[in-house]
Length: 264
Ligand SMILES: Nc1nc2c(c(=O)[nH]1)N[C@H]1C(S)=C(S)[C@@H](COP(=O)(O)O)O[C@H]1N2
Ligand SMILES: [Mo]
Image (cartoon, rainbow, N blue to C red):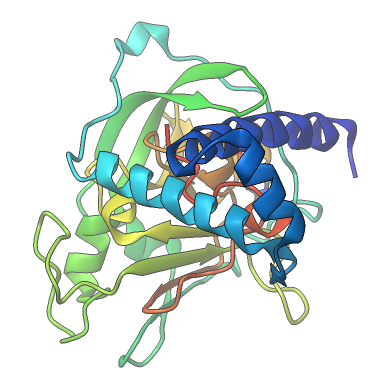
């Protein structure tokens, strides 16, 4: 692992600890909590009181998200190139000519799309902040297609197989979206899970441009996610597969013990 990842882990750990504290205060006294945690049977490796706190934190994030608040946008003159950060799943050069996007949505036959298919959809540009959990952030201009526009065009992400509503809400919506780097072996190298509300947020873009230029390999060419309502960790680079699902997807950093939502 690179040194930057170790730093990333430290930041995440601190953030998670803060989350535990907030949840812990809501549940009871620190002493009582400590005793409860200490004596609890672990469930999935995590003692159940901590699991509960994690769930409580997730519930809070979800409640906060219901307002669908936009992330701030900036003047284009503020945009700059962010540092190339996080190279998991990017070790080999991308073969853009052979690249295909695999799209799965429960109850539908899988789709295989080219970059031209994606570029043919309505383009959205936005200037937002890419915020890394390590503590840096950069204003970036992104160009691509909104995930909600993409899903509406191909009728993805609903139980009925109809196009989702423009606000991406309602009981017909499949609750989760999994996005993964191209699978090399049996598992992709990097993978993120998103709740449908975040995935269908109007500022969630499948991007093929950064600052007016085609995306560079280090930034996730040919296609990456820009999702400014989430920390950098969810802004997955070099997407190979998108899956709309009822099952809460695995998430690279959540598997390492950190908040699955990673919103801010
Ligand atoms: N495939 C992949 N995507 C990834 C990562 C990674 O390691 N692999 N790191 C994430 C993190 S932690 C950040 S901060 C952003 C950084 O994006 P940038 O390199 O374009 O600045 O990418 C995210 N997407
Ligand atoms: Mo990051």
